[in-house]
View 1 (tube, protein in one colour):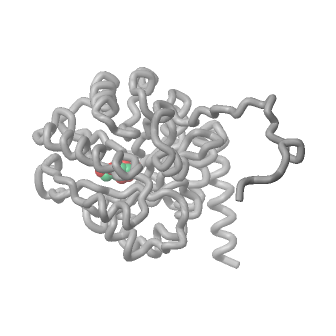
View 2 (tube, rainbow, N blue to C red):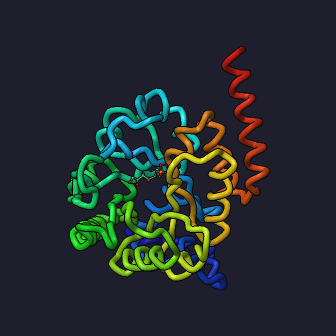
Length: 298
Ligand code: 5RP
């Protein structure tokens, strides 16, 4: 039966226009609801940034230092991450399905560290990504690498499949040993990935003109931590990147190879989400490390 109530009994707030709230992430306003919802599982809507904990290294490196036992070394850290970047093997075997933040699934692979790393293929089907309820798929893109074109096609195929299902694609700009890591190269690599459809891009921080890399890329950029640095330097790196426009970090070795990984990830969070200075964040790291040590002793 039709609604028999009179309009007088209801409040339609006819004088209040419904607001059109723009989505908080750069370049993402025209995406569909499902994709935006998944991006909000990766990026914190309050700060607009993310601390991704990356531990997918085993897909070409095997059990590298700090990742020998993901159940013991990494699972205790996941509560501090905004999202996890990992392979489906580790997700299924080791991560509790009660984890409710976003999952960024490693979706390319093939060669080991013993071979040419750019020789990758897509390594996950879209059905599998949907079944695992992931927020994004991550694919390596080797601009200037031996298999540049194939790696770009891997990305564009994942973008097409992901867009059909509202799953984001993270393009990871991979830098070969022989390539120069400078702003000019990073602008080229990140911009190509964005133009060809990546939802967001991961790249390396460069000391000079990194702000031109973030400015010329129309989608969010997160930075890789790279090889292990002393903690104050890693915190400085994260600080420089976010202050120059990065939407966060996708950090692995500088967290899980730290002497105090739980303290380190919390200090990185403070830099990324609260704009703490590197010095303040290092003090926080030392304090958390000390209190963790005392709670183990007691
Ligand atoms: C492997 C990756 C890693 O996830 C990435 O490099 C992040 O880890 P790290 O901070 O250790 O560099 O994409 O290719």
